[in-house]
Amino acid sequence: MAGKAAAAGAGVLLVTANVGSLFDDPENLQKNWLREFYQVVHAHKPHFMALHCQEFGGKNYEASMSHVDKFVKELLSSDAMKDYNRARVYLDENYKSQEHFTCKWSRKGFIRTRWCITDCAFDLVNIHLFHDASNLIAWETSPSVYSGIRHKALGYVLDRIIDQRFEKVSYFVFGDFNFRLDAKAVVETLCAKATMQTIRAADTNEVVKLIFRESDNDRKVMLQLEKKLFDYFNQDVFRDNNGTALLEFDRELSVFKDRLYELDISFPPSYPYSEDSSQGRQYMNTRCPAWCDRILMSHSAKELILKSENDEKMVIYDHIGPNVCMGDHKEKDAYEVRRFSVKPHCSQEGRQHTEICNPNSCIDKSSPECHIFRLLIVHYASASGLCSRDASHTSLSCMFM
Image (cartoon, rainbow, N blue to C red):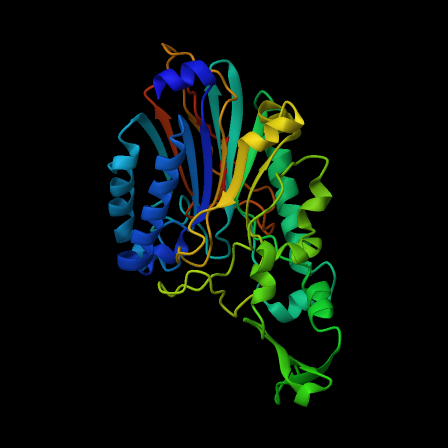
C-alpha cells in the first residue's frame, strides 16, 4: 500500500451509514453490515478512510449501548483494518448525561473533523438532519414543511463550518440528510389517474388515511397513505433503473447548488429498506423511498478530485450491500484513486481540537438545527505515512476516491 500511495497518490474512501437498526439485531444485521463493509475495504484498499455513522448505539440507545464497545472493538481489530497503523474514533456514548449526550427534544446534529494529507487540508462533516414525522403532512404542500426545516438546518451547518473561527478549507459533508422526494408531486404522478378517498377520525375529524384507487380495473387500490404508512402497490418503480425516473422529485439539494456538489446518483433510494435480514432488496411500506444518505462536497473539494471531466470516471459513488439486508438504510461510499500525493515519511505531530454541537451551544434553544445525537466518526490512516491533524468542531452511501 505504501508503494502504491507514493507512486499514484492516496486512495480515499468515504462511507456514511445510519446504523440504528444494527443494534436492534446484532446477531444478523450487524454481521451482514460488517461483512459487506469489510468487502468494500478489501476491494478498494484505501490509504485513508472515513466512516460516518448516525444513530450509533441503536434507536433505543439505553437498551442497546451495551453493544457499542463490542462493535467498535470488532471493527478496529478486524482483518480488513490490519494494514492501518492509526485510527481516530469520536463517539458520543454518555447517554446518562443530557448535557453531554443529547436532549429530550432532538437527536440530530453534526461533527466536523479537519485533516491534512501532505499539504492539503480539508474538513469532513458527519451530519444527521430531521426526518418527515408524518406522510400526511409531507403530502400537503410542495415543498413540504419538513423540507423547509432541513433547508434551514443544513444552511446553519454550512454557515457554521465556513465562519471566521477557523481557516476556510475544502469540505466534504456526508451522512443522513433525510432528504425526501417531493411527496405531493410523487403521489400526483404515481396516482395521476386515481381517485382519492379520505378517511377521518370520528372524534377529531382529522385526516388519518388517504386511499388512492384506480378509476377502472375494479377500483384497485394503488396507494394507501397514513402518518407512518406509504403502501404503494408496485415497489419496482423505486428499483427499476435504480429509481432514476424519480430523481426529478429529489429537489432538496437544488437550493444549495451554489454551495454543494454531488456526483451523479446511479443507485436506488437508500431508505427505508426492510429490517428483515432475509429481505435485502425490499422496502418497508412506512415511507416513500428516498435518497436520504448522501456524500456532498464544497465546490473547492470538487476541484481536489475532479480536475477534468475524465477524472469523474476515477471516482466511484455507490451504495454498499445492494442485495443484502443492512438495516433500514443502505450505506453509501465514495472512492477516489489518485488525488492527494502522500509523503512516505511524515514527522508532523497530529493536533486535535474538539467542539460538539449540543443544546447549550445554541443561541436559540427552540431552534432545531444544533443538536448532537449518537454520531460516530471513525477515521483510519494507513502505514504509508499519511499526515493528519484532526479537529472535531461543533458543528454516511459511499465514495471511493
